[in-house]
Length: 264
Ligand SMILES: NC(=O)c1ccc[n+]([C@@H]2O[C@H](COP(=O)([O-])OP(=O)(O)OC[C@H]3O[C@@H](n4cnc5c(N)ncnc54)[C@H](OP(=O)(O)O)[C@@H]3O)[C@@H](O)[C@H]2O)c1
Image (cartoon, rainbow, N blue to C red):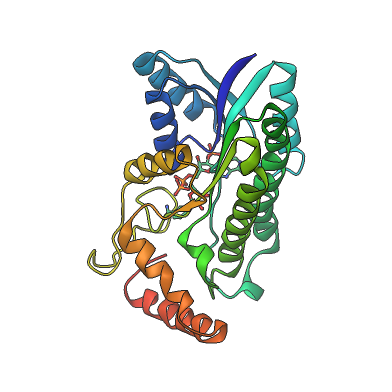
């Protein structure tokens, strides 16, 4: 069986930067997301530059059966997944949860939670049997406190962080590393409605390349989680210093400020 690194959502942003980092290390790549032409472009570029095998697999992770299909594809084609990167994810337009579109909520639920859970379970089980492997789950600094007006997105990332930390402990004695990647704001297509314009001294927009470089290093060091930029890590710590209600209220105030200093 050939060994592969499976990355969901490597067509842009953090996922693409992670694909480059693994390619630099000579790893064969399996890319899974919706946009086949974009995956083919990534395949062509990485194969030419790094001389590694790259296989694109069209997969819409908002479909409930997509993770199982992806796993079956790997079994059928005898592709052994030595590293799994659950990166695909998106956010919704900022508004109160009760005003969100339900179909969009379900799509987010499937991509940000269900797919991460099922892929980690299926591939993690094989890694445990082989007593070797790595799982990198992309959470966010949004995981550290409630996010009024981005309630579901924040909750989805809190889920990813808690799941990854628990699996880290469950699998550490089997030689399997599980790391939660918690980036702060990163310069990608995530911000479809305009890039954040917060002053850098307050909250710096970092590059996906920096995030990917530090994430892969942390993964191989078998860290339980990483916030790849010190200033983002520092801000993420504030939730430790207040009651849960106070922190939720502060986040609501920050959300109101965001309307003035376009942020999400
Ligand atoms: N940018 C930030 O500030 C930031 C901060 C913290 C965490 N994150 C997290 O980082 C991860 C990557 O986001 P990004 O910032 O790099 O944004 P991005 O450039 O928009 O990338 C999102 C990726 O997710 C894939 N994707 C979206 N819906 C999908 C679906 N239904 N099925 C399969 N793949 C899907 C997309 O691929 P296709 O379009 O080809 O399907 C794309 O490659 C996300 O989990 C996000 O929540 C981002």
